[in-house]
Amino acid sequence: MKKYNVCIVGGGSTYTPGFLKSFVRLQNEFPMEKLVLFDIDAERQQPIGEFGKILFSERFPELDFSYTTDPAEAYKDMDFIFMQMRAGGLPMRREDEHISLHLGRIGQETCGAGGMAYGLRSCVDMIESIHQIRQYSPNAWILNYSNPAAIVAEALRREFPDDNRILNICDQPENIMRSVSRLLNVSWEDLDPVYFGLNHYGWFTHVYDRKTGEDLLPEIKKIIKEKGFLPQDAEQRDQSWLDTYGFVQTMMEDFPDFLPNTYDGYYLYPDYKFSHLNPDYTRADEVIDGREKRVFAECREVIARGELGDRFDTISDAHAEMMIKVAEAIAYNKNTRFIVIVKNEGAIANMQDDAMVELVCELGINGPRRMAVGNIPQFYLGLLVQQVSSEKLLVDAYYEHSYQKALEAFTLNRLINDAKKAREILDAMIEVNKGMWPELK
Image (tube, rainbow, N blue to C red):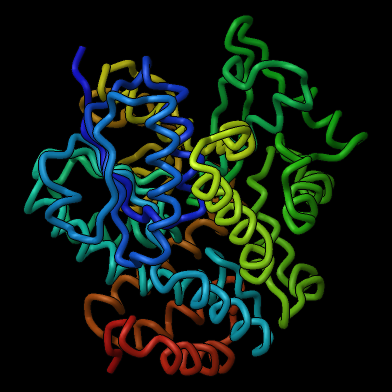
């Protein structure tokens, strides 16, 4: 059986230890010859890399594992590249969120002005990285789950139009399905969803029982109406995430047809969401004070002890296991179904063909095969077309270095929706993103 060479870009991420553990757990399903972590921040990556050395020496000793800041060393002769970079790091995420909120608009990581600021930074860094990767591994599968995935996907579609081995994917739809499985007390693998939308902006129209074919959505609606909604790993979540999942109940009271993505709340209730956000302590601050400290402390404990101890069980990540399963589906041509980001090409019949949409796809050695959903209702179409237009204008701004296109993108975004406010926020973002955005003229 072939063993694969894998690189994780963003080796210093707090999600990386969960990936490393998942590679151990799934080593028989997805065997590896070599694993390299790559990050431009050597200091940040070092404790995670050292944790990895101890982990693999105990649980996967035959694996060739290393970490580096050298692109040539990281990318050469790879089969799969897992992309989880965060352009600007958490300090810039904090700026995105704080600036937006202080100027009167939502500045979430991927939604509204915050997501757009992050998106322009990500266009710069992602495009540069993939050009580097293709120098050293022209045939590697690039599995991108860097945020904001919708804007990144649109930019990569334009920059690499003939590269059929770039796949953009987000774990949030699967997180929702896993959370639904908790409600129903069934295995999430027995659920067969139908889904349409954009990244962090979509709806489940059906959730079938894979064994019986029964549509479970009516039962799901009933349970959520009576008991609310929690993430599948609620015991490990910060309060902001519990609130986000809990808000699904409110969304389904007002719009009962479909099961929404948790992020839909930002678009459907922007005033309410804004009123419940603290401009001086955002989700970025929560991550910095919470997961960041916790994960690095756990890694350093293992390093100080020189052995894994009980840390194999405490650092986990269902999202990592999903991404490895994606690689497995491609490697072994399994045609497993995942919700991924693809060019529309008629799958949502009444949306433009070149929109980067999020759909259920069968995934195998030749990439994704879309599961078409036909026409979607006018209400949802209107919401999505507005957002697609905003994202496309933002990528226009990247390529054309156009202040005017950026202003149009910010103005059109539903979470800004005012030209004077868009200009105020855009100007503030330009100032703080100097050297990380293309120069806008």
